[in-house]
Image (cartoon, rainbow, N blue to C red; front, side, top):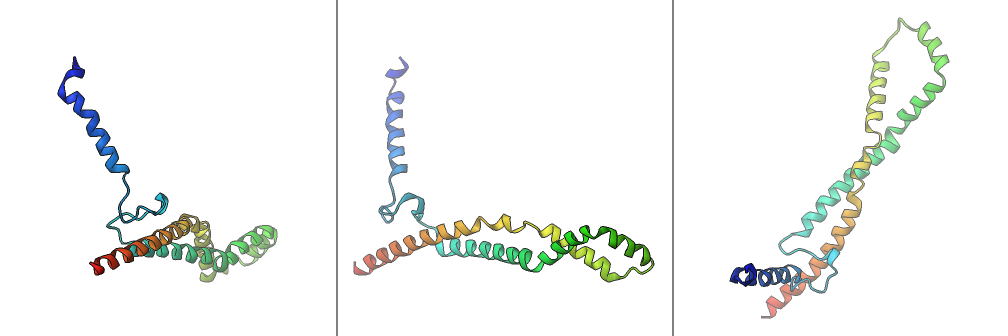
Length: 152
């Protein structure tokens, strides 16, 4: 008897009409494939700039690790190989500790801490490519819409 009530008969029609509204594409971007279809109301210039900034941070950390901090990391490995020689030198120069040796250890620790930091930001690169494609379609459709408004 619950199926005879008017609210039970109206419920399926409401869900089908709302699902039709959700799946219906925007009139401006109806010819654009869905993975790169721009959402109305979003400025994709800003989105692309943010992904560009994240990609620049990736480039910075990558160059920092591979070009600037790599000698410190490689020097640490060479030092481990010559451990016996360095122990004998350390015993002879135990009284002579300078600030540069302590600073060198700090830089080596910094280099070890920065190792692999660029992997955090590497995902900004495919996102940047995606946002540039979406921005292309957004700019194309925005220009078409503005021409139509000028003609009317």
